[in-house]
Image (cartoon, rainbow, N blue to C red; front, side):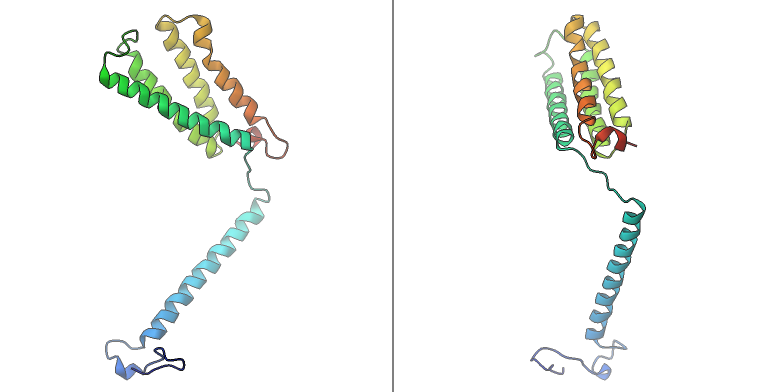
Length: 175
């Protein structure tokens, strides 16, 4: 093998490598050039996307914090209900049908928060639906109207947080 100018391996003659029609350093250069072309293509494609959408969507910090709290809290509540369902005796005041529904609603709320992170208005309407179902379940379990309606506070806070901001208001950016 031929040594290069600075002591490393330089270009070798194709005759030294009978398996290849060109030397390995040329193959490495070809791979690098292809990756640079791919990067430039992506970069150009990305610039076109930015030109089509002059203002990228920006979320207000309060909305981000509220959605993170919603994901953590609903995950915790869903896991709490799930492990109490597994213990099947630690919550005797809940009916057998109510606990699985509450588990599903809490994980549905996590899905709705993720949809809101992805700028989907369907996430907000999903929160509204799950709160309505939670009120119906709580009333069926014998809770009072006031205790059941406390879940609507979360919807009001979510709607308010979606309205915060001037340029980065969340509600108009939802699809």
